Length: 277
Image (cartoon, rainbow, N blue to C red; front, side, top):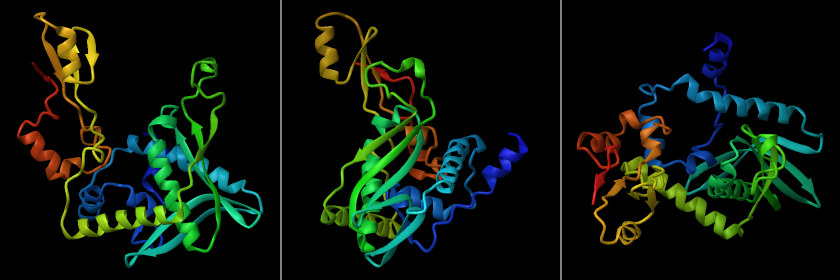
């Protein structure tokens, strides 16, 4: 890693401010948040893993620099929930007719336009809740996605974006729904601070099992067995894998007893060979 790049990666100036937890933290698995806090001195992060975030920060810095005089860029809002102070840094707020549109920048691959839709909706509606708790009327939510892997030669393919910058409209939830969502997440994290929970399949990015008959793949065992019929072909099982754990995207898999116990006892998620039916 070239020294200037490495220094930029090491000298992370991120500041959560006064928050007990941030909007991003709320959306992180409670177990992961607690393990990061408890073992921050033991955590080791590969520099290469931080490069995408560095690219995102560079874009955010340029966008903030060129915000118009009547736009609000990179301001952190706070609000209380269950005696915790929730914080969130909103990339851009634009105002019209006494209401605000909340905009968040994402530097992502094109696949994220579909794969990240749920998380984006949750994050932006937490920001919407924060804004409304600060006496701001919210008129809309948007993601501005900068596509790192966009290729002009693919324009015209079904569903492929026409430009490397895509504006994604995010549904704005009723305030009560957003408030209940934030309250539920806050409660989960407060409980995790008292008793460490296990990560759910969703937390772990667990992909469902797949079943092969020859080269054909099926989502369910029943479909595979029907296709096989009375033949002698084996149905091969490719177990679903928790990608968050396998690839250490959480940064704590090496010190996580849930994952380490699973590996130690030969859990099916850890066995890459699958099995037969």
